[in-house]
Image: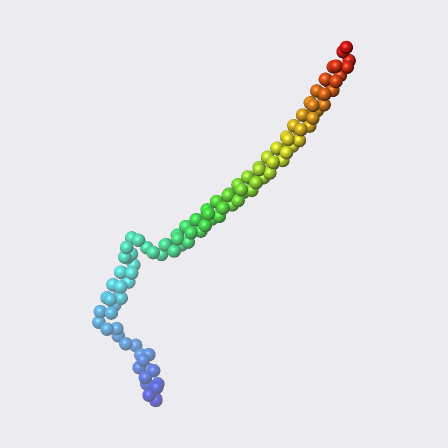
Length: 114
């Protein structure tokens, strides 16, 4: 055998662990099984993401509500302008009819009775 094969055989051969190895491994496994604290950071990232998403969604809904409110306000003001214009036209027509009757009644009153 050449030196490479000897080194390979030696490296891959079974060796006994040093004294106390098993006890150290078991102790470390037991410590990892126990939570070090009651507080765990594992859930913090997903909860933070969920809260940020909920906050963003809430802000978006509030924005949509305001936009719809502004649109409704504009429509209401436009409708009120139309209604005011129509009322003004109706008032003008009623007043013109009333003036015609007054002039007709006054001229007819004076001419038919005497």
